[in-house]
Image 1: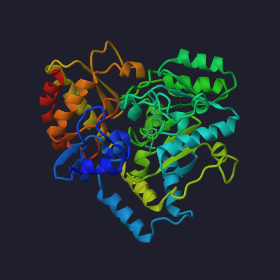
Image 2: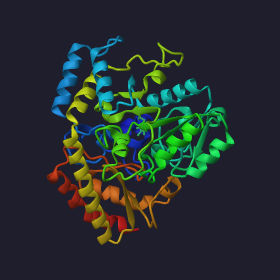
Image 3: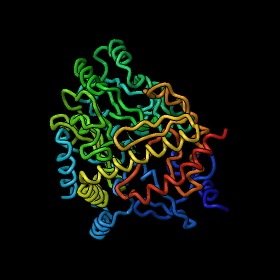
Length: 437
Ligand SMILES: *Cc1c(COP(=O)(O)O)cnc(C)c1O
């Protein structure tokens, strides 16, 4: 019996999170025994170049020796105390150093909790019930945020989730991404009832679908005009696409993100993935008076036995300390080079496709597209069968891609030229496979 068969006997679908199953690409998921730098090793000892990076956290590469040493040292001091620690203060200070607009920070264990808490905080602050989210954006699996949630939900081909009550679903208004008119209409239809608009400021859970020039600035303006809060869910982009996350990239209008800067910061940020350095840790941040609405100072309750866990904070502090500008430059350069090579390989095999990027995050959409893929409906036009053929050819050649066309590729500072060349060498055959229908 294979490990996967054994897993399926005791774990639904054999996986602890649906995106790990090969639902949309077919075949059995690869079970990983260990990872190092840019490489994964399966339970048979086979090596793969990894382009998943644990879905984001592995910015420095897997098992960075300094991060591992920090976690080991923390573990020797105790796994969890249920009491405040100096490490939480240091990590909060490190987050605030990069994103001063997150003046106060509350740590939780998952991005799901961070977004759920941000929504509760927005409702508590405004006394309003409704929340607006964009179709195709993923903000974790809490009931109210699962509508048209992209990512794993999209990969399973589900509109949302069973088990969410109609009453809860009715409190989430879903509008198409990159569509100012739809958002104006939502506010007009629900005057003084919308607590917050939550967005991925550069969506990467419906595949990478960057904001149109000025869209985030528009979100700031319309929320302010209607007395609603704006939540930037940077669980994925935060400290991955740049030193200060997507917010920082937009504000500095760096070369690759030409856009109108926001007039003012978003009210709340959520962070996860990189901020925990591969351990279960996420955060909510915002200006002090808003964050102080959280218990024990304010009336909005939120808690967690393992929140701010000492191993997780050690991993986060060390990861952020090591992730200097040169790390982001390396990941950016690796990403640009790879995007170019993928485009060239697919072009020469005559495979219609579109590569879309937001900072170093990118997705290869298979299919014929006239222009930019701007929203979830457009992303759903992709040729999933061509992606599946491409995915399996890459996997056969020892390159592990995210097993869904609705995900971004994640590179790391450990993806040097030799590693990239292994990916590039696998491209021609994979492009040929994608072209055969
Ligand atoms: C991954 C992700 C989440 C959920 O984080 P978990 O730690 O998986 O609960 C929320 N928002 C965005 C944008 C994400 O990419």
